[in-house]
Each structure stands twice: as structure tokens, then as C-alpha cells.
Length: 124
Image (cartoon, rainbow, N blue to C red; front, side, top):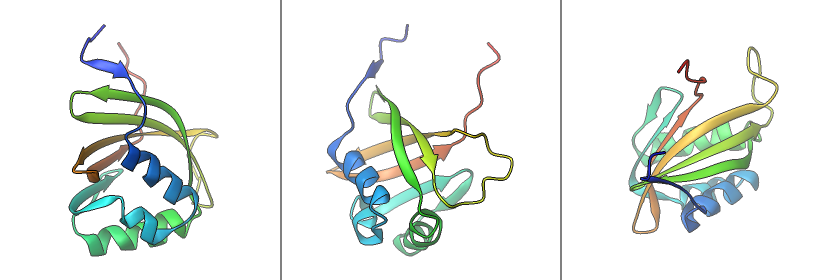
């Protein structure tokens, strides 16, 4: 077992982020990000507040995305959150239960990076 990885609770700002997403509140979601935050959502990068806001407005709030935390893990300065997603987005070719992994870094109470990945099981 890797001793650098520990089960954890959500950092306050990450919990606030998920609550804001579930409330469909663009401004509250944006308030969780640092001014210089970077988001990568399934290999698409949003690296400024304007593009992050457009992504949140259209693909999170617009698609009525909801998040249910399945697991939280700390790995040094990284918070790893596995989340069950639902909403009104195009679900073509997606599993019935969509679980995505978010890799987050937080500094000074704000999310500085968010990387969202649809991981596949390891063959090992």
C-alpha cells in the first residue's frame, strides 16, 4: 500500500464547489476557482476565467450536471475525488453509472487546478 495516499474528507473549497455545481449556480462555482485556475475536462483545457465560466455555464449548469462523491483520497498536495455524475448531457456511449475522477490542487482556499478524467480499470 502506498503510504502517501490516505482516505480523506473533502477540502472546504472542494465541498463548496460540488455544492455549487449541484445548485446549478455559475457564480458560486466560479467563486471556488483561483483567478489563475486551469481546468482540463476530458482532455480539453480551459486556462482563463472567461473560458472556465463559459464551460461551467454551458456544460455544467446548462446540462444540469449533478455530482455525488464516491471516494476522496489525499495524495500529498493533490486531492483525488471520484464522483458519480448525472445530468441532461449527451449520454451516448457512456456507462449507466458515469464515474469520473477529479484531480484537484488547492491553494489559499481556492481551486488552482481541476483535471477531470474518465479512467479505465488497470489491466494489472
